[in-house]
Image (tube, rainbow, N blue to C red; front, side):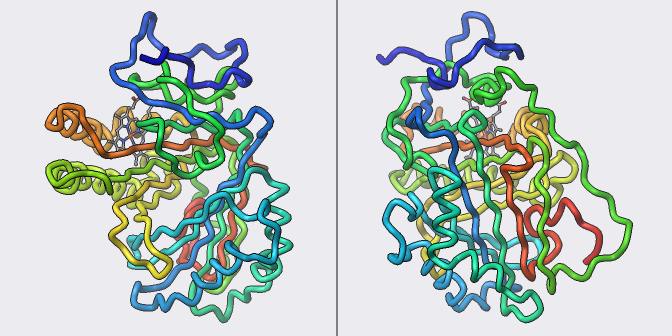
Length: 364
Ligand code: HEM
């Protein structure tokens, strides 16, 4: 059996100024792993480039085709192309259909060069918000590696940023107790990561409707971003049935709560998205929650104490027991806690509750 090691990669370990939460002599109840990135990799880029329609019937595929043309453009050298580009979709609580390209690059410079050389930047800047058939959103995160952590339920799976890893850790120590996510984040060794605990209140001058505007939303100090995913495509009938009848409804309830009532727990935006084909084809058996929280503490509090995640956790324990802990379900988390300058949010012709627009909600 591989030896337990810290989730923090050796080159990112430093003397703790902020105490960790690992109980003394702690032994994790089961194994999970962390992706290991090349020590020379100082940052990564995670972009969500999305399209919004007032209803799914309006998705004629043209907008996504446009995005795909940039993502898979052969006009740029291979190394500028994203290491991963995949499409995901969700219908939000205003019945709008959101379909987005999720893509990763190994650093900001590669992203900048890709944006320029494919023509993406010029096209994006040229979108006229007053005459769009659909909304567009651009949410880009540039975490330095000390502000990023991934966990995976097995060593062979790859999701999201893990396509850029060069290795996988042994079973990690920091999991299986509340507060372990924070202990896995290298920067939390020296920083309490306090965020801006505030939703801007309504008031002040009325802005034009976001449906006909381009709005850039400023980054927030220590915004916490989680992508927490599920892959059940390898499950056999018994487990699949359990997943779809027991686990997924519990997860859906938690995701709905964050989407509909996120402001009660410091969550600006939460999308529960299914991985889909380029035209929105469903049935890929992979999904993820993508949540933006005002503070890592808010994300911790929701996961530890809110009945919806407490229930997700309890149902998962039951599910694992029913399967005698022999799971073909794969789970992963990616968490970043970002400086304001490591975030880019821009919305063109989107409704006012889209992504971080919710943080400046004042009309609509
Ligand atoms: C932690 C289950 C989805 C947020 C955990 C843990 C379990 C769990 C077992 C403890 C892990 C450990 O430390 O060993 C699940 C299952 C899910 C799911 C089975 C879906 C099927 C989500 C989603 C989110 C989320 C979608 C947020 C969008 C968190 C957070 C923690 C956590 C933030 C870490 C808490 C901490 O360490 O302080 N979850 N979860 N989970 N979960 Fe979930």
